[in-house]
Image (cartoon, rainbow, N blue to C red; front, side, top):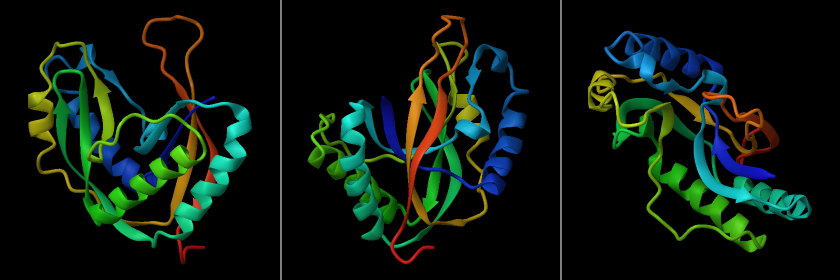
Length: 189
C-alpha cells in the first residue's frame, strides 16, 4: 500500500482555507490548475511510498510511540508559496519546531520498520492547494495568499494515510486518501 504520515487540519481551519482558495480560483488562468479539495488537505510528515501490508503493524507501533513522545502543539495555516510552477501551497505558523520534530520521528519510525526512505532533507511544512504544468505562473497565486492567516488549533494526533491512486486513467482523476491509523500526541486524549 502507498502510505504517508501526516497532520490533518481540522474542518474549521480547512473551511477558512477553502474560502481563501475560492478567491484564488477567480484569478486569470485558475481553470488550468488542478485544485486539491479540503478533504484531501494534509501536511505530509513522512512519505513512505509503497509499503508491504505486513510492515504496517510494526510501523503503527513505532508511530504510536513517536506520537506519545511528542506533546500537542499549536499550528495554523499561513501565507503561501509555490514550487516552481508545479505546486501552489499554503504554509504553517505556530510551533514549527515541534512539527519538524514530529516529522523527524515519523521518518525514523518508518526507517526502523525497514522502510526505505528518501535521504533526509530539511522539513518544509506545506499543504498543496493546486498543481500546474507550467502555465499559468503560480507566483500571483502565492502573492494573493501572502496575507492569509488561519485560526490556530492544537495538533493532538499523528495520522497514517493511505493514498489510493486512480485506476481509470481518466485525465484529472485524483488519488483518494483514506486514514488507516490515528495516534494521540503525548498528553492528548
